Image (cartoon, rainbow, N blue to C red):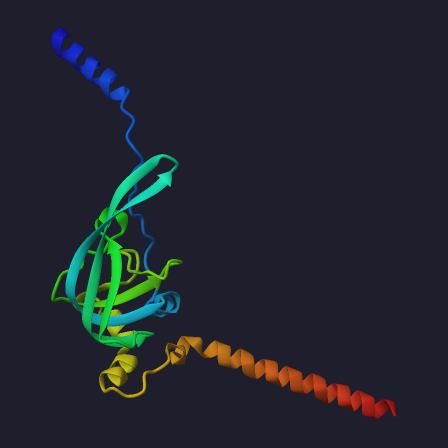
Length: 195
C-alpha cells in the first residue's frame, strides 16, 4: 500500500510541472432563425459536396508560439443560389476538426451552406452557423422555398431583401418621405401666412 501511494505521489509531482500549450475548443450559441442567419451570412446556397482537400498552415497566436493548423477546402457543385452565389461551383474552407468549429462535410452529400467572407477575402463556413445536410435543414428549406423554386426554374434571382421580415425598411422609408413632405408643406404654409 505504501508503495502504491508513493507512485501516486510521484506521478502527481511529475504532472504538476507539465504545462500544456494553448488549446482551443469550439463553443457555439444556438443558431438564430434562418432569416437572421441569412442576413448575417455573406453567401447562402444549397449544393452538393464534390471534393474535399486538406490544407495545412502555421498560425502564431502568441509571440513565439506557432501552431500547425489544418483546414478543409471544400468544393461544392450543383449550386442553387439563395444569397449572392452566381456560379455552379463554389469553394470554401472550414477547420479540419469539429473542436475548432469545423464542419464535417461528406462528399456527394447535399448541404445548405451559410458562409462568411473574412478580411482576407477567404470564404469560410463554421459549425456554429446553420450549415447542415439538407435532410436535417427542413426549416431552412421551407423558409427559402420561394427563392429556391424561382432559382431552380432559372428565373431572375430573388433579392433576399424581399423576404417579409425586411419590409420594415420599406415602411421606414415611406414614413421618412411623409415626414419630409409634411415639413416642407408646413414651412410653405407658415411662409404664406407671414405675408
